[in-house]
Length: 140
Image (cartoon, rainbow, N blue to C red):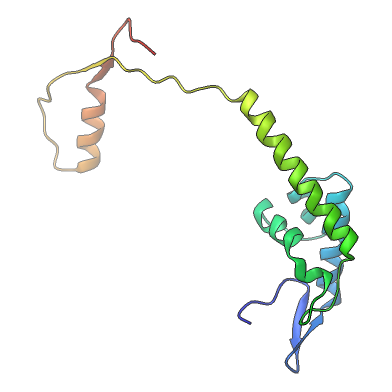
């Protein structure tokens, strides 16, 4: 194995529970199931990590125990957390769509002929962009 999941360590070729880390894993599950966000769940468990890392912890089924890893989380708790992830994801997708505004895309613009050339590509790009003007009655 190239990577040992958080909460485990290897001793004499076998995965064993690292109790200080395992307690944090249990707390993440508990916090998330109680309604906290992913990052808040980890933060209150004493771990600073981004939401995607917390989500990966919640979705690693090795925590329920398998032929290599001993159980840290009960299967029912694991299933509950993953059902909540699914529900929250669906709610956020539906919620986000109603709040998003479509960007304004102007399709009618003019650009003056360039009269200057800069050797620096950034300066040249900035100059060229400054020549673009949206027409007054531009169609969005």
